[in-house]
Length: 336
Image (cartoon, rainbow, N blue to C red; front, side, top):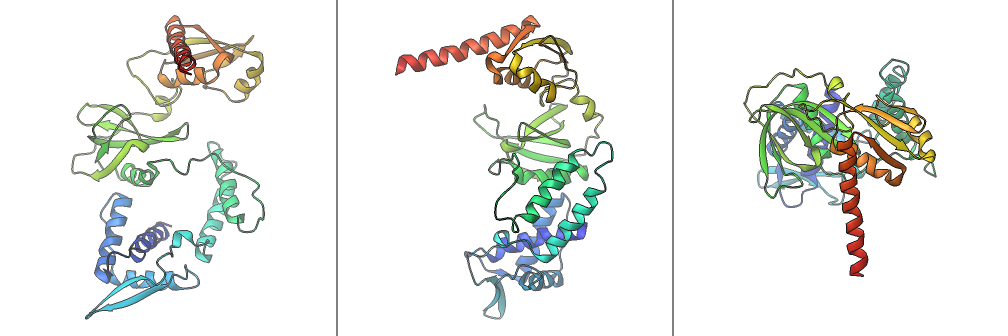
C-alpha cells in the first residue's frame, strides 16, 4: 500500500512537470523533482530511479493509467517531456481502473471495521468513498458532506502527518490572524485535530518549552530541521477532555458551568452534546469544563436561546461581548 501511495505522489509530481509550459523537464529533472516531492511529502529523504520514471511515464500514457498525452521532444542531443495538450491534467481525469481497484479494496477493508469499538467514524468514511465511486453512475447527486474545499492549509495536512509519524522536528513559518509579520517556530509535531471545519497542529515549541496550537490555514511553509525531536508525554485524549474546541490553558481549572436553554433547543443539545460532561435537567445545561474562547463562541452562536447562569466570570464575559455586538448594530443604524 505504501508503494501505491508513493506511485500516486510521483504521478502528481510528473503531472506538474508535464503541464508546465515554461520549463523543459529532462529525465534527470523529472527524477530529481519526484524525489524532492516525495521527500517533502513523506518527511524523510526519498530517491527515485530513472527506470522508475520511465515506468511511470508508460503507465500514465496507458489505458489502465490516465491516457496522458505525454510526448518526448528532442532538444539537441537531449530529450524533454511534456503534455501535447497543455490543458490536460490527471487531476481532471476520471478515476482510472487501478485507482478504482484500490478504492474497492479500501471499502472492503473499511466494511470489516464497522463493528469494532472506537471505529464509528468508518461509517461516514465508507459512505463518502462509495459516494465518490458512484458519482459517474448517478444522474443526480443523492448525498453531500460538509467540507470546505477552498480551506487554506490542507496541503500541509499529509506532510505534517508524515512528520509526526517519523518523529521529525520542523521549522514552521506561520502568520497568525492578529500579527503583521511572519514567525518561524521550531516544533516537535505531535497531533492533528479538526474542529469547526478547521485543522490544527499540536506540538512542542522548542523556544517557549510548551505545547503550541497552530491552525493549518495560517501556516506559510514547512521545513525539516536537525533539531532533536522532543518526545511527547501528553495523552491527547485526556488533553481535550476538559475543553470545548482546541484552546487548552493548562493553568486553568475545570469549573462547573450552568446555562439555561430555551425549550426549542433542548432536544438539539440532548441529541448533539456540546461536551461529554454535559447533562440537562429542567432546561438547565450543566457542564464541567475550562473557560475558553471556543466555549464563549458556542454560547453566542445560539443567541438568546442560551443564557449563562454560572459562573459569574463567564456571565460577565458573555454580557460584555453581547453588549459590544449591540453597540455595533446601533452604530450601523445611526450611519444609515
